[in-house]
Length: 419
Ligand code: RNT
Ligand code: ZN
Image 1 (spheres, rainbow, N blue to C red):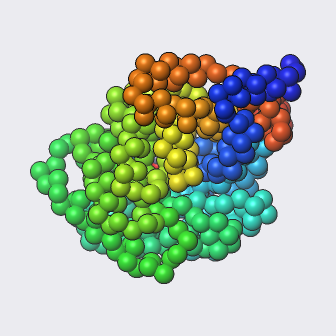
Image 2 (cartoon, protein in one colour):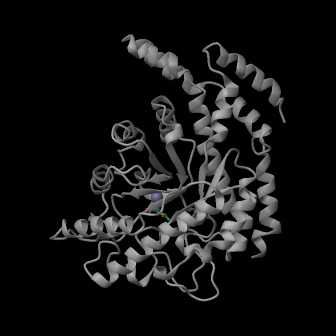
Image 3 (cartoon, rainbow, N blue to C red):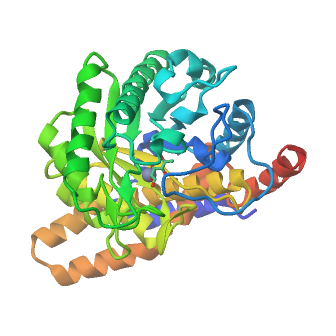
């Protein structure tokens, strides 16, 4: 191992030249909660006692051994992965990760089915976030909240209502607000003749869910849009325009947009949307993912777009107004390595964004010095943030460099490979 302290001291000096306080950046970075999606651990299957498979136009590929088969296994894997993810954390559950002795249908779920999750979270001082599961169910095959069949639509509205109540239960138990993400796969393989009807029904369903749970106070609701799903290529009911329109027209603090980085046309980027969304909304929920040609949900990379998103949040002064959640599911590699790598990349992108002289950049721009602006922004792309990152990981005991990889291999050998 190289001398981490020496690297940190050198980096500190480098950043001080530009007025960047490295320790302050670490302090801010460390407090931003990252909401870890539970579903990387078992390929989005969950623990309902049914023989259901993953539907809804999303897909996991790969059959790497060792996925979690029970909630206890999933919690153990999360416990392991979280050791190597520095900073504040929450865990993000789906309704399908309930625990019950017998099958409980989606319109019958209750807080008691999530009691073990809540106990676990409380004992670790973790916040919990939540998601209604509007997919992987026999009643989700022809639309859920937008279904033309009133019985079906009612069923899913009830699911949404129960999820908001479970969100309140999580908030009560953990003492931290619960962020709920509402995503429905509803869409069509072909172009429907009536493109408005399903949207009016979806709008009404959301209205009914919020109206029926007006007493729920500590829940934030993200409405997630999408461009298309597999088998639903031509039409998405909850499109970007629909979801943005819904959130903006409601104009209620707890109803916000969810921007998933895999849910736009390949040349559209979320980093370019944030400045517009914040013109109308105080908060945003992010699903950080990595689309490769489609919404493939690859493990988050330390790539230009992830960095650009975090830079944008820092420059806009909106880091603390953004709920950052991850959303990927790679079944072709060790799932704990997927979590650790993806989450570390998100945290690293936040830290590197905080290690930039935003004040200097803004002043230069305000003066109209666009040549200077370009030079400064480009220079900082290769600034020595990795030395600060290593120092931060050491300070938080999250493993410096690849130290954690050996541990992950050991965990695979001792635990995962025995499943
Ligand atoms: C699907 C959405 C959604 C899901 C999770 C499992 O395209 O991104 O957020 O990935 O709810
Ligand atoms: Zn998502």
